[in-house]
Length: 421
Image 1 (cartoon, rainbow, N blue to C red):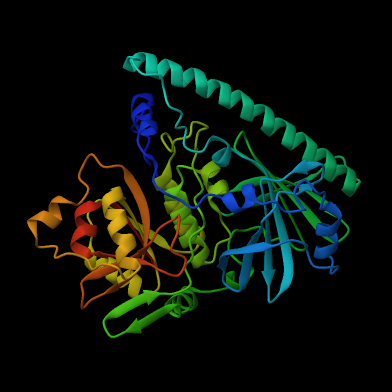
Image 2 (cartoon, rainbow, N blue to C red):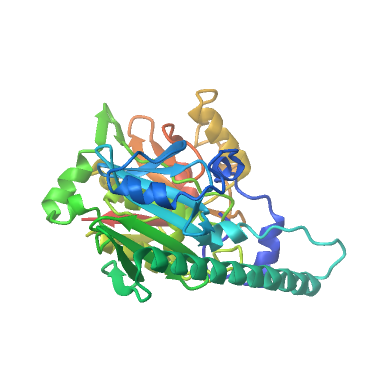
């Protein structure tokens, strides 16, 4: 992740874009796919599949699900309602197609990390001016793309539904995550259009679409039932405790580690949320940086939507972290990151190395310090005997959590987010 707080302006953006980006798994398989479905209009097949017709064509890649709801995305970029999609997702339950989500414009994937190289010899002020000029061009390009996508999809949906004027709807409980949407009825299907201003154009199609982010299977849970459900994902082996079932949602080449980590946890908690809508809710700006967004408020809003509280602390409380993990509540840590340590954790996860003794002065000196970039990770368990914490990243490791000594995590943590009953 580039920078996750709003306290840094254009000057730090200059420095950030010149630094090497943190590795991530891009939506490359979609963009690079040579599928025969690329550009193919799937409007008819999608509507038919949702009404019990033939299964959707193409190759679908699974991603993190929500409870019994399985989520996957198509490894192709077809068109719907006259507009090519950025990504097409399907939600299935017990094998049956429940809804389809088509994203047509997404500022996160358009801007990515704004990491263009600048000519040598420029002063700091000249660098800022050149960045502003380039960014203004990109912002104008996206504004055009956004307007065209919204107009094309709106017209296509209205024509298909035979209704020029949609109904107004609302999704979500809390003010931060609440979405104002337009809805059309097409037979027994609802076509719901999200259009976060200059951030996202998305169409969700399905029957009986819920008006909240929480999965319908969990809507009537009380506090005790929710706690039991979350605890059921915990597996214990001696002094090792692991929360099973969490899977990364690929970050792509975007400053979204804080968002993707939150989306990973949100889905585990039972919420149908993804990083793109949360970027709009958090006030992300179209600059290729997380600067200026209100991430802390977003984290609190996600906890509230799931029926939980949230404790945010600049102190890494190992006791509180262990307690939450033992009860099936993942913990998110914003921490200082270094490529050298990441490579070590890769080797440890692959079984090619062991973690050095944290009492060693040489080992502690290798931990990233105050000047290191910030990054978000999801803690999924711990080993009390080895004093290690298990964590997942937003770019890889679907079934292979990394390990870190509690001492290193405590020394490098910047903020710790513990979800509470």
